[in-house]
Image (cartoon, rainbow, N blue to C red; front, side):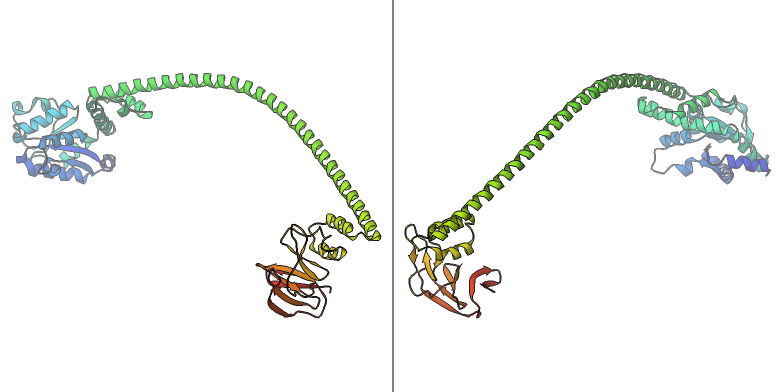
Length: 416
């Protein structure tokens, strides 16, 4: 085989051929099919590609439609076959290329009219088989790219037409221009373009034109809308700038007002602090004057007013007045120590605790009871009525001045 024939076979790789033949010529058909497959053709045969349970006519229509070329094996048997005649008619209706190859002598008047006008390839027992196959391959190679596109577009056109010609199945973009170039570049000996193919290409172009016009109209509409929005945006930006300037002015005024208010608040606080300092100073002078004159109760009241929450202050002041004069004591029911004795605050006169609470230098509440500490640093737990509940150990040899309750228990505070 020549180098040209080898290159041609590479080009024809995957080309599809449908063999139309009589079952009585099955052996000759198988030989030609094998030869074509060896040269990289896809070969459709009814005996190979139709399942036993398939409806044979529908399947043959599908195989013929998918083939690029119909190879008709002409013999007295196929010339007289109604099925073979129907296959030729169906292929002609699809404008398929038909390549008749004579495998046995046939009388001229027996040849189907649709084949009689075509050029025959002879592959009878008298003809060299290899030469006949090479001639067939050369014939099948002619305009093969155009033929393949014919097959593809025919399938798309049948689908489009069978679905009612919907827009979604039309060609798009570059495919339209390629199809128009294919249609206009039809080789002289190639099959004619089918009406469905022509309709698909023409309607695809019209639809593309409509889309382009709609796109242009839409673009103009968008441009007009964009221009209107730009004008509106400009005026809105001017108004926004004005509002921002006004807001900035108001913000500056508010900040100035806030600053002035803060300045006035600081001045008021300074005045209040100064007034409180002067009040305390006057109170201290009055307390000192009262102490010098022996008026201990008024002095205690003044000193306590300077720090009413300080228990240490109350303990110190307890020795400055009698229980009846101790108007600085806590709310009713609260104990207090005066001159080493335990008293309870009441609505009227203070009530001295019953029992023998012993000299007390400090106390703390523990649940409903009192814990007292003496000047010898001994703890004693008594009830609110002064009854002894429990005596504690001696805590230290130093003189205590108070007792506190904390997370770790009771803490006695001494002078040291």
